Structures are given as C-alpha cells and as structure tokens.
Length: 402
Image (cartoon, rainbow, N blue to C red; front, side, top):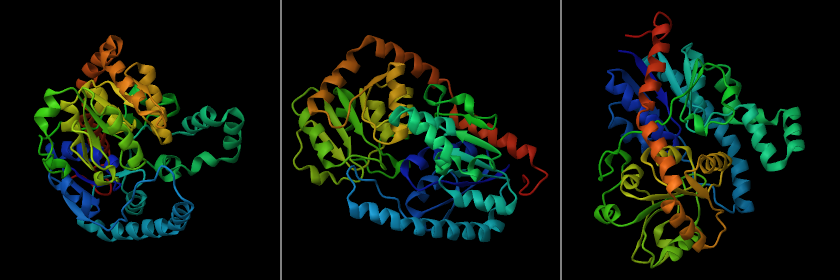
C-alpha cells in the first residue's frame, strides 16, 4: 500500500476527474488522503478516501458580460487569493505528519499542494484537467486570435509564462504530469517532455440515476429522457451562460420533437420563467447519467464534457466561451463529431444544427469509431500506474511507501 495526498481545486470541472483517479487508487488498496473544501468533501469520501476539510473561498462563475464593478472586484480579490494560497500552504505543512504521503497529486490551480510537497521534499505530480499548456500552445492561441505580430510580441515579453500551467513550480518542479485528454484534443503535443502523460479520459462510469456520487437528487423524468429524442444542454460551471441564453434555447426548442434537459449552473431556473412542456431545467444534474440516456449534447466544449460526449458517442453542437473551450470545440469540429455555433446565433440555428448532426451518417461513423476506441481506454488505470511507478522509484526516500 502506498499513501497519496490529493489536492484538488474546488470547481466541479476540476473535482470530477480527480475523483475518478481517487476511486481507482482506493480500489487498488492504496491510502488516499484528500484536502478539499466542505462542498466537495463527500464525493471523495464515497469512493473510499480520507478527507481533511480546509476552508477554500468558493469560486463563482464568470458572467458573460461582466460589469465594471465585477471587474474591479476581481482585481481586488487578487491579493486575497495570494493570502489564501499562503494560508493553505501553511495548513498543509502543519498537517503533514498526519499524512506523510509518498506522492502528492496537485491540481495546477491548487498551488498550496505543490508548495507543501516542496517544503516536505516529497515528489509531486501536476494534474491538468484540460489539455496541457506550453508556451507554444499559448502562442498559437494568440496567433489564431490576434495574428502573428501579437504572438511575436507575447513571446518577446514573456507574457505567456504568467499562465498557471506555465508556472515554474507546476512545470519544472513536477516529477510527472497527468493530463486529462486524448491525442485528438491536445495541441502541440510534441512540445511536452516525457514527464507528461496524456491519460484521459479520467471519468467514472455513471453510478445510477440517483446521482449520489455527485450529490444531486433524483428528480428527473428518466424514462422520458431515455425514450424520447432528447438533448442535454450544459454550458459548464465557470465560464457559463446566463438566463438569456437558456431562455433562447427553451423558446427555440418549444414544440419540437426534442426533450431538452438544461443544466443552468449559476442561473436559477426560476429566472427563465415558465418553460415549454418539453424543456426541463435544473441548476445541476448528474451529467453522466443524463448523457447516457440522451441522443445529443449541446455543450460548451469543456474537456470533461468533450471526453464524455466522445466516450458515449453523442453528436455535439458546441457553444464555446473560454479559450480552451474554443480550441477543444475547433478540434471536435475538425474531427467530424459536431459543429460550432456562435452563442449569439438565433435560437433556430441551434435546432437546425442539432437535427443536422444527429442525422449526419459521417458524424455517426466517426463517433462510433472514436467511442469504440475510447471504450478500450482506462484513463484512471493509466494514471494510477504512473503514480505507482513514481512511488516505487522513491520508496526509500521521504514519505516512503508503507
């Protein structure tokens, strides 16, 4: 048995793949300790981890059209974030004798896990919930958005290195890196060294319609979702969409053949008003269980959602917002598994796009092939093997295996 300490970042999109890894390690008989804030503690306990709850400031969604006041508050919070990082690092260092892990796995945003591992002289593994970022990846994004001159300026000034994934601690200091992606979705893969392991998809099989592993109640019409033509609509939990977008989708699909399941995240469904009979809205749903029963996916193109859509063979209509989502959506469209529709499009455009991707035989053949291949992958198992090998190599050093 080896003892691992996991430091996730408290957002659903960051926690979900870490839970898959934690469950795999626990199933192999390892001791898995997790440090996370209370709202995400139970899901780790359910898979057999020992959880230490720490106070981490909740991260809210980023509005589509931030006001000046919102931007000002975000600037003011920067100092709070740095203070919190220092406090959490101290808490982990002080609690180290309780864990004495052989290896630390830290989300690249949970810098406190990395700093505590460094202080204890224990190897750490950086955990990337979306594709890994190198300077070449960022420069290519700038080149696509702003042109070659802007990319050259960014390179000359070294601005790209402030991105969390390029922090020296995250890259140069990591013994290994686990990346929740597959080759089709990793830009500039050749720019990463041998420490990087592209092990995705890091996902668990659905636990049932009660959604217990995600902490959601069972209040969805599961039979209708499975029996009727249905589409799941989710725009993520961080760079999500507002009530205007969800209302547009509801109105556009009213009276169509589609049963629509909306996951509205930070938008209270009550803000949408009275919905058509074929539209169901909840703030959060057990995504895996819903997607298993749906016929199609209208998605923001986040990595977890993209991988799940591919694994389940769901045609996708993509409405990206953040930079990584735009890149993932572009690659999914190029792979021939869906289409990108700008968020500002008229509602009918989404209905038309959905009908087209579901009926397209080329998309169906491509998805069948990718789904079959991904079904043979075991992301959590591959990630666990990387960690076991690392622990074995350092078993006579600090935090040795027990």
